[in-house]
Amino acid sequence: MKPLVLIPSYNTGAALVKTVREARAQWPVVWVVIDGSDDGSSADVQHLAAADEGLCILVLPHNQGKGAAVLHGLEAAAAEGYTHALTMDADGQHPAALIPAFMRAARARPEAMILGRPVFDASAPLLRVRGRRISNAWTDLETLGAGIADSLYGFRVYPIDALVAVMARQRWMRRFDFDTEAVVRLAWRGVKPINIDAPVKYLSAEEGGVSHFRYGRDNALLTWMHTRLMLEFVLRLPQLLARRITKRPPFQR
Image (cartoon, rainbow, N blue to C red; front, side, top):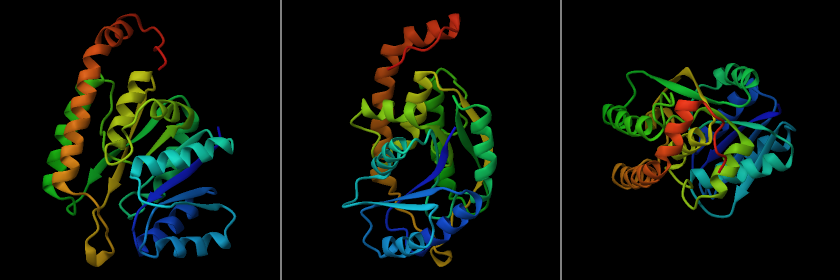
């Protein structure tokens, strides 16, 4: 197993440098994918990389979305022989201190996906906490209760080859729909989820927090995503039920 930390970033400002430094303190190889940022954060983190062999910066010419940025990083990492990627957000919400624990879990079960199960504090917006319960309920149905504790929390370790293969067959999964659709389709592929509790902190603007989530736009995207997944779920249902009954190996697609 050869893992790395992968951080997609779009206009994250000063939070990016702080996140990268925290990640590098926990892991020897960190890659950042700058998704067309125009806020100066790219130059800041490239300055760090100039003096740090363990830090690699990939720059996309224009904003393409979180999923597209992750895929770009995964493909480049696979070409360098990396087998697993721990993805984390660039805005400081995810616990860099847990990177080693998640990597240990991935080493113990390299065929699985290691998923963060968010532990919220008082900073979490109630509307978003309740909203994700709806998405998680749909995910549980779409995977016949595969055991995905949270479909939206992006602090997780993926087997690179499996995720790239899944994304190569889809035109979607390139923006905010990435995190949820990735775990559903990996579960359909037979990749087992392992859930580990991890705190999540919503930073205020005064604390340097940056959010590109838009309730109307992104909830519409999630609704369209679950509609697509449910339609495909109906077609896959006989296969999923047969796998559940016979415990046979999954059909790879």
